[in-house]
Length: 180
Image (cartoon, rainbow, N blue to C red; front, side):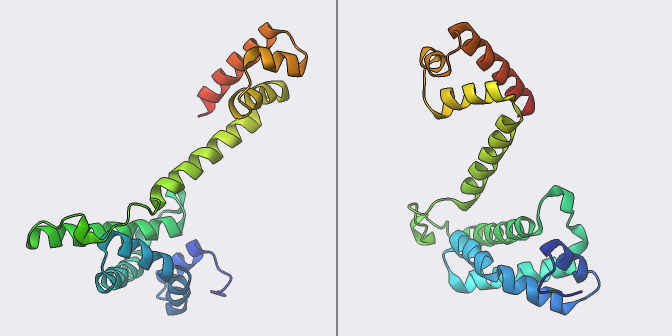
């Protein structure tokens, strides 16, 4: 297998055959963002590096626990890093005195990566669902919800009766509710 061009999923499958080149490639691809995730949780670079090492070792040893149908390999790995970092934070908090939020060096001005991913996935689901609608309903939804037009404004712009606009929106919303 050519590891440079292999997918992350193929690399993880290669871990099960003890392919160290696959681990090196996976590390090269993801160590930067994984370190950032661990550091974001811990606020300490040395501890974040320790968590990262443990996470790569865990993925290497437990590659058979990855199931592609549940999500992509990168997300799976980053969730392992994040959970290990949280576990370290919990252990640190209980082993010593409680750690204040100030001591973690969290900067609330940085956006939450997981929240951003969730928003992006929601937008993709909505966009895909709207694309399935018949053209007239799709146009009406786009004008109402993304264009900010009222029902009478949509009727005027599209040249259809107000009742038709309302009916198209009602049908479109029922279909979207079923799709989403």
